[in-house]
Image (cartoon, rainbow, N blue to C red; front, side, top):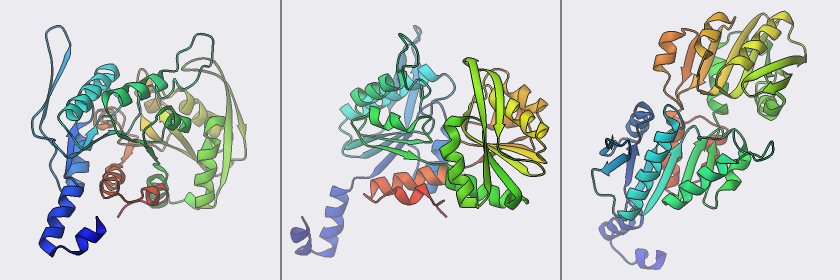
Length: 338
């Protein structure tokens, strides 16, 4: 192809390049229209026309409102809200684009659904994250872009490429810009599973880290917590990948204050905030609970004024641009796009 291209005029080269590199189309599912719009604005393109509705028997019907033949299609759908409906809607959208002759279909899933069901932790337990991976592949997805998977081995559930992006660069930027005493802080993991994430952030900030060991009796209920590390007279920054009912981080905040921490912040990639989460945040002693906008946060922020957001649309938009142009995305693992 390079030899042929070298023999062509500039104008023919441009035409040839456009044939090889199809145009981008971004479509949004129902879960997070705002994020899809921000990504499209960042890339300087519009969000594609798609109509999603339900028949009277509650079956989902999706109509793609423009041609995708030969296009590079990105479908934005987060695992939040009505998770099962949104998952089914995304599968139908992928399938619709694939059989309409799209060149490549990429599912952009900022919060991967069923990510916590990633292993067989008791008899007869399903590995639902693997099932979701199979469904996405069968629907016709060629590539997956997601963010801060609950367990990174979920990437291995797929036989197609998976780019697991990290919120860490955006988190580091927020800490440096918004916490005045960040040099006198301790990065704390609310459980042993998050130790690797916390040590990485602590190393890059050149501060110490601590760990809270928790013993769980059953899901969403925490029994006992033990703090490993010294937080006395320091700013404690709790870091985790997600907060659902917020039982863990609120108990952790109480534990840190009892241990002598001067202030407590919580920084989470995915703020799911279901059940009693918002009332727990309002009653807890946080300076701020910082989440990214992988899920819609406007309603949560209205109900709990301690919740602050980090916009990760520039990271996702840059990942799309680099994927489309065939460039490496590993730059985004340690840098925030300007």
